[in-house]
Amino acid sequence: MSLRNNILSYGSVAKFFHWAVAFLIIGMIAVGLIMANMENSPDRFKLIALHKEFGVVVLILACMRLGWKILDVSPLFPESMDKISRLGAKLVHSMLYILMFAMPITGWLMSSAAGFQVSFFGLFLLPNIASADKEFGHSMAELHEILAWILIALITLHVLAALLHHFYYKDNILLRMLPNFKGKSNAENTGTDTGI
Ligand code: HEM
Figure 1 (tube, rainbow, N blue to C red):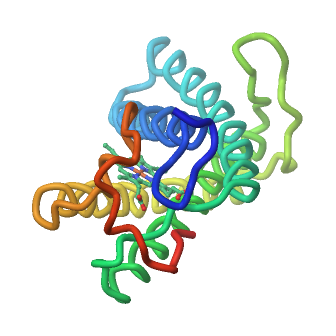
Figure 2: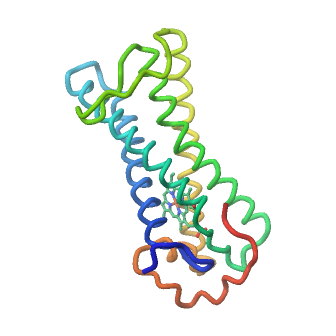
């Protein structure tokens, strides 16, 4: 499998970033929802610390992923995909990219405003990016929660679209993001429009 994408399929680097970030983000959402419904306890504080540390991992991976995305080519959409679906896919992908940054950054702002530096697995502390301010901290907490619900809706839409392409349209949209897909039976990818 090639490291780079081509016009027919994703390469192993883009696939690695996609699935690493997907699993991390789905895990972060699950842990975030559990934390939000727990009473204050040492276990809750441990979960919050882990949530922040993995949030930093998401931010680092998002930066690397965006850098790779800019440098690499994007596979073409299948010819069979109409204009509206292409536009919808581009819009959802762009919003997912924005939220990959916005979620960790609003979390970091929230922690900074509460006066807590974020630790990276005990190796080092991240600098605070906002001065201590209770009101600003509350606004960031609200924004973080609203963005999480938007992210949940977008991921649901994104997964449903991937399944629809696979089982209903029977194109290779899902297959080409999976490991071991070598781009066979890709003849329908002759469009000119790329993903974002
Ligand atoms: C089980 C979960 C998921 C499935 C089945 C899935 C499936 C896919 C597939 C099939 C593509 C390729 C679309 C194409 O070929 O044009 C894709 C792209 C993408 N996915 Fe997912 N995905 C999942 C989770 C996520 C999550 C959680 C995120 C959150 C950030 C995400 C963000 C993206 C983005 C931004 C792209 C565009 C990639 C690019 O072209 O740079 N995905 N996904």
